[in-house]
Every structure is written in structure tokens, then in C-alpha cells.
Length: 189
Image (cartoon, rainbow, N blue to C red; front, side, top):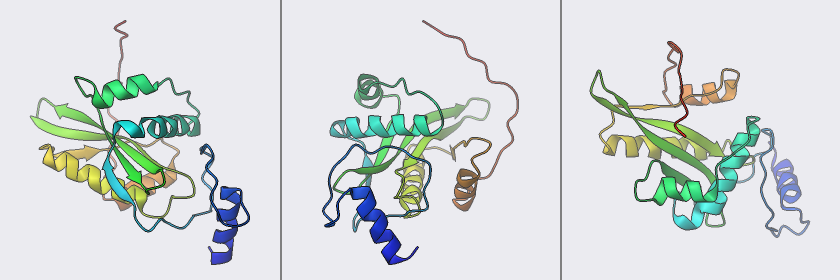
């Protein structure tokens, strides 16, 4: 994409003509061909309590992107990340001016093999920042966390028709595995 198209897209996204940014609630749209300039510094780090509002908003945006309704509440997210029995880990991509993406990790176990694993349950990069390597950095950090937890593997899934995600994960050296069997669920409430 040419520099002038990027600048035009940046002005359009910012809603200003003088190049100053105005903060507005980000929303997930279909993937655009617009890639905004990557901030000079992007930090991949563990989510903190003050990230909860933006993280919650991005989870809802990802659900909407897939046509799902997000029933996650900020309280539930706080419980699962920071409660007395944390259930998940979240990584965020922080530009210093806000979060640009996140990854959620959930432990797995293969009892018959005695092998620990980690599921990359969610991977999300805001539209306009895709294609800047942020997703790759989130996956790399997820690998490091899984290794340090003694995991033998990192798994991820993508919807059948999400060809872009399939290509991305294959480029990141994930191997496709066939789905074998049905998964059942029972409500415990």
C-alpha cells in the first residue's frame, strides 16, 4: 500500500484532518486492506487489572467478528485472570497508547501421554494493525510461556472457512490435525 493511501487511511480512522488522534471506541470490522503504521514500540506483556476494560472490549469485538454474542463480563474476566484460582493467562500487545491485540492461553493435558499443553484459545489483533507482525509476536510469547510451564505443545484452532487464519498458523509452523470424534458437554448449573 502506498504511503499516501496509508496516510489517508490513518486520517480517516482518526477522524481528524490535522493528524492529531481523537480517541473513540474501537470496533471490529471486517478485515480491511488498510494497514496503519506500526507504533515504534509494541510491548507484549501479561495483562494487568487496568487492561480489563480494553481486553473485555476486544473479546466482544472478536465474538462479533465471528457472529457470536459475547456473554463475558468484566467481573468474570477479572475472576478468571486475577482471582484466587486463575483459570487463564492473557497477553496483550501494548503500544503505550492502548492495546492493539491480545492472546488468551488455557492449560491442556493429555493424561494417556502425561503431556502438558497450552491452548492458544484466542488471538486477536485490531483491524488496521494486522499485517504489522503483532500476531506473530503474541504467538512467539505464547510459545515461551508454554515452554516455561513445561508444556510439550501449543495448540490453536481456527474456523473451517477462515483461510487467512489457516495460512497464518501454518506460516507460524503449526501443523493441521484432523478432528477425531465428537465433543460433548453437560451443564453443571
